[in-house]
Image 1 (cartoon, rainbow, N blue to C red):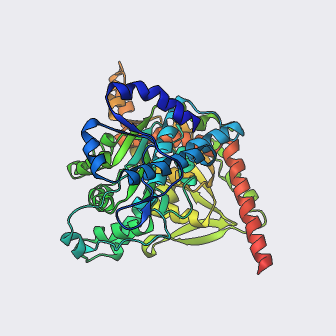
Image 2 (cartoon, rainbow, N blue to C red):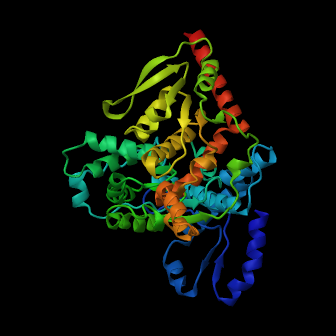
Image 3 (cartoon, rainbow, N blue to C red):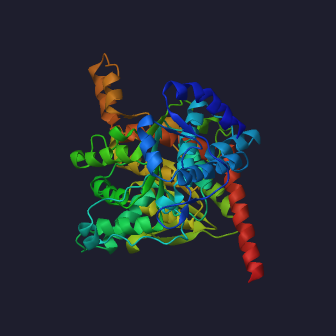
Length: 502
């Protein structure tokens, strides 16, 4: 409170120069609103009224205004002891040695997240975030046409983008974990979110506007939607997103997203991108866009160097031996995993939460994120044999491998693998269009021809490779593997306790 009064004393000359009226108020009363119930008006403890507004003050209830403002002063008094949020938690973890102190860019991003957190807490009732509060009647197909005006949230969301390993996912989790448990909130990977959307669309197939119904179901479940790794590569997703989020924003959804790409660069060079562009405009209108400008890759600061990533040829026997060590006394047998819409994935070998695949079985077949998410719902460890060097000849497999690593990372799963090269070597022949243009030409036309035949020029893959290299590095770090072991131990303890209680 002393800090507030000190700031006001510093601002007094400015108020005097503007010939404004400054109302000071008493502390600790609740204001009766004109809508028949008492309420708190969220504003500053002191309000500056221009001379032109004094007629309003004369003709309206001065007592109601001062009482409403006094409520906020009481709240400010309690701020010193009740302050919470991602920035506060970040500082606590730094002090306790749980996190490495981040750079100024991370702290700046946390300030944005803290600002959003404070706005959400202040507007929780208006945004209808409380899961226990009465939900509004959902706007169905007919109702949405009778009432054409949208119900935008008064709070704008946040779109965070930046390079790989800058801590976007960690910051998102830090923000989400501080939110009240009774809020209508959801934190999900973008891949998984879109799989759910397509599955829901299939369920409502035949309706005049199934996307409106899907948006209604999503908003019923969560008003605050946190999407990690927002990345549009699929034309089906691109065509759905514009109309889906038009409905979602109209229903008051608040979006918090992380991405490697700025909004204007999403789905760059994609098919029918002109149909996707209105979504970018809506995204920028409904979200504050913030870049994390850090050049530090915090994943590569981990202490592990190799972990379960083994480089070399003919390591099949060695990998199976390590796989057997992980499953212990269990016997690995072929298994089956159910994925979305009744599809099933065949697992060559599996036991005790560990699955074994040759690379070709998992990444050289027409599989996608749905199959990989289904796999890690049943297994916590993947043994993957024979990851190749990627180039033009196996471009599709490279795309699937990037998606696979994203899903492994999102599920905090463990990867045991053999590869033809280091993570950097795997993607050496994958470049973006701009990188290809900047490559120095060869003096020999023959060597240039050989280079071109192996080079894969792909903007999306070239952009994603840095994220994949970074994640492979972290997945094989000492810290990641220790965290995975602790997670398995905790899960086993919970299962043992449940068995004893039964």
